[in-house]
Image (tube, rainbow, N blue to C red; front, side):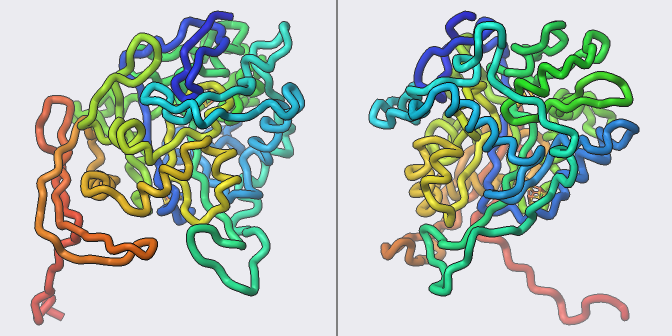
Amino acid sequence: MTAAYNWQLGRDMDYRFEGGGAKRQFAAVFNINRCIACQTCTMACRSTWTFSPGQELMWWNNVETKPYGGYPRHWDVKTLELLEGANPGGQVWNADDRSEEAPYGRFEGKTIFEAAAPEERAVGYLPADEEWKAPNRFEDHGTGWSARGASLPEHEGWFFYLARICNHCTYPACLAACPRNAIYKRPEDGIVLIDQERCRGYRKCVEACPYKKAMYRPATGTSEKCIGCYPRVEGTDPLTDGRPMEARCMSACVGKIRMQGLVQVEADGTWAREPNHPLYFMVHEEQVALPLYPQFGTQPNIYYIPPRWVPRDYLRQMFGPGVDQALERYTRPSRRLLAVLQLFRASQQIIFSFDVEEGERVGEVEVGGEPYEIFNDTAVGFDAGGREIVRITVEEPLHERPLKVNSI
Ligand code: SF4
Ligand code: SF4
């Protein structure tokens, strides 16, 4: 084991390889306040990559209803229990120790790598075949509803949809656990891939991945996982005409909850400062989007704007101590954040930087008992070469249909 810096934990941690490795990193922000569980993302992925024999139970993208749903069943509760068993009472954050380098404070507990026995690479478990079946079990099941009804900030009866793909982790547990060294992280975009020639189907990756996003395919005797739609990201898919495009699950998102991109990464695995990159802006400047179970220690790269109506304790366990600040900022967004939120799904091309052009004041509403002014600013997205690819205003333009619509 070597020491690797994990900025999400605010400290060094034990990891099998030197940290970082990628110059650019595949990353995304999912705004789960907006997810409607239509599963369009799931089917976009399914119809592109996992429609063949042996992939029947393989959903690289899935959307589960929390708190009861999970694919495979109870994946997160099981991993949290393993960690708690390895370090009883010690899985805690020191949120007072916050700084620019450690925005969530310091995690004082043990990661899946640190809690592992000497003969293991990471704490994990192999789900039984049964647990991969019925991937959308508990869909729309909420906690008990109260006769008194519900009001923000927290509802007494609640559920929410958690859309999930492989996190293309900075410190992948699947990669660390593979005895064949069949898993690698691409330096150009941080996408984590399984070499199908080298894989012998030992399923150590399935066991070690805390998110359970490496999956075994019996028809080939190998493990498979999300490949980040790398031909689209590279711009080498024939349909993309040389332009870096977002993955299929992102592009297809009906609820417009997803924005994917490539961020620049320093040698130690931290993000290079890019204040005009929409993902950097949301994750590091506004800190409105948070990693999923950062305490696992893999430094996942899919970030979530947490749902406003869910009890904070539950959200803090899932997204760490940054939840309260993230929700405050999401509920009363700055002008710049409100503009950037309009860029979600405004383009299939990857946006590498943005600008905001100020517009006129168009309204005032009350948020949390305080007045909140709305301005019709314009968000502009640019590609890697600085060319404009999208322009969108905060206020949706109103189009009046002519009286005579068609010839009928
Ligand atoms: S989410 Fe799992 S499969 Fe994906 S890179 Fe991380 S550890 Fe590997
Ligand atoms: S397509 Fe978007 S809105 Fe629909 S389930 Fe997937 S993430 Fe949610």
